[in-house]
Image 1 (tube, one colour):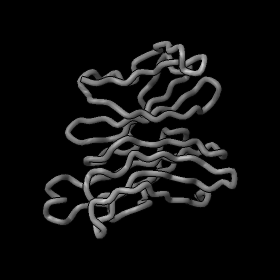
Image 2: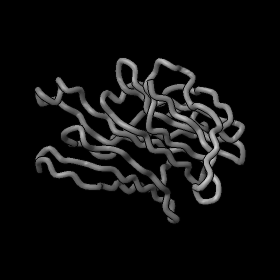
Image 3: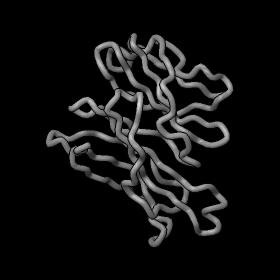
Image 4: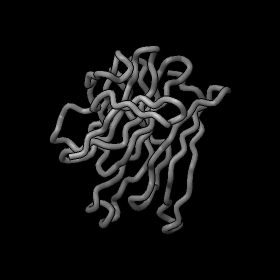
Amino acid sequence: MILEMCVKIKDGGKSWFFLSWIGDEPDVFSIMPASVRISDQEILITTRREGPHRYISTYRSKDNGISRKKLGNPVDNTNRGNRPALAKMRDGRLRLIYKYQAEVEDIKNGTDTNDIRAKLSNKGGKTWCRDYVLHDDGSGKDLGYPRVVQQADGKIVALYSFMVKETGPERYIAATILGPPTY
């Protein structure tokens, strides 16, 4: 069993203070959290979870991480995907970036889907739009691990590792730059 925890860090990382465990489900594998501050007291946390398959769950803390409530799963199945990345945009909406990876059997028979996907929430993480593909044609399992930021001009930059089917085993850091969402 692996559980994630919330810690408060002071003085440039010299002092760490345990606040709480993130997940309340002790039999669920949970790693790789990403969080954003919603307000002075609220934090939204996304985390990769594993059950019969991998999925992404969200939690909201209204007391700066001391406690939290599970909101749901913005992504019910990433198959073999990995960590989420989360950003709060200047207009208050949330952008979630994650890797979707095909199952091993699909990769072996050539029907694999390995791509970087995104979702938006204009409800503070309570509900999410359907996912959309940012970068497809990925190959192998070593892609993903995204990070996401919003630039001063409003554009969204998603960075992630990637490996293209046609070019072989070389991995590289890719970026997708998106205009501010209009929906």
